[in-house]
Length: 342
Length: 168
Image 1: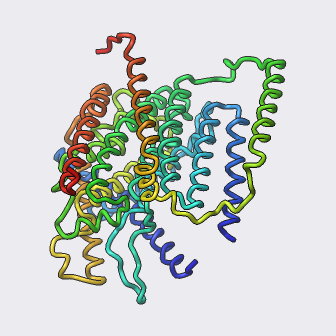
Image 2: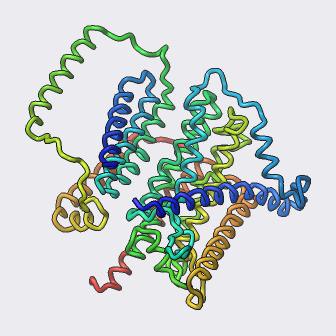
């Protein structure tokens, strides 16, 4: 094992970890400001200039609160529930190509922690185990509202996983590779997948909303029916981790959408640059796209009311899955025709 | 050398968590230990350079089937109070029957097991090779198993739809 490679990967892991947490922390601030703007209020403005220190104040508050574990709960599962949530939210960031390779000290450094040859399937895997955190946390609380929240969350995630997977298969068909690096490279310049697959993008976007438990799909923590949903019994930083995991997974799924449909770090006119300039501009382009998606996520939350549970299931099983399958079949036939198989 | 050490440790952890599946008293904990076991098994597949099989193992077993198991168990809400008293003669016969089965399996597999290095550098488990094999050499079994899957799905839907339900 190459020591330099080890150091390089370790540094990258730490940087990406910090960036994910930082973006998630400031997403909370941004969400509150955006909600205030949409509802014609001012929003947080006390901590620091423009309330910029608000996330830090919130974090300190979370840590300082009493950490309470209900008497009849399953103690160990109650503790590891939020941890699993956070873990599954963060782990997808390992396969995201954050930018073109950069050159430091004469070494080509790829801005991707691991380029598996299974790439997209890894996302499937993480999405499919993402439900455990909420399920375990909700069940271990030994509270009926928590259990309802957990069951709602898991049935919703199982349903929307399918449509998401089928829409991802369409992208695999289009690129001919499972590796995210290849998917990004095939969208060089302005040759983005969104122009070929608008329906697929729409399905993937709706499923991402559902998978991250964001409004209008936030039935798992529906205040008007379930008190706090799966995190009713949680307090202190355990609650903080659950809420924070939602923001991290929002950031990561925005990044995924930018990669799969909007060219990742590619931007029009990128052929005029090379080396580190290209790398820095690429990373900037990538983060711009990601932040745009985070904005859309929040915009939707403060615009659209929550679904009813049967509407949610109907949308998932009777609209999105058939639409995704038809879209996939048409894409496959067009590709086969294009390659001269008929 | 390091890889061998990793595979030995991983093997021990796999067996340990598999044992915990049957030793833990609580059904939900059993299911969670089973999920952990699947992850360790996927670790073994990765050591054998079969990344595709490893991730499919996680998606299908840990991600789909076990979630449904957990779902059902959470709704059942099994308590210690509801648990039936263990019947001693029955558990005794069960132990003897299980032991006899183990003996038969061991006798059958005696010549099949050879203790070789499990870390084999082969590329069979990678997506391209596996796909090519499935769609050329094994295309007939592959198609037959997919027909089986579809008929199972249709059967499940039929069973669920047999009683007319009125939910509006």
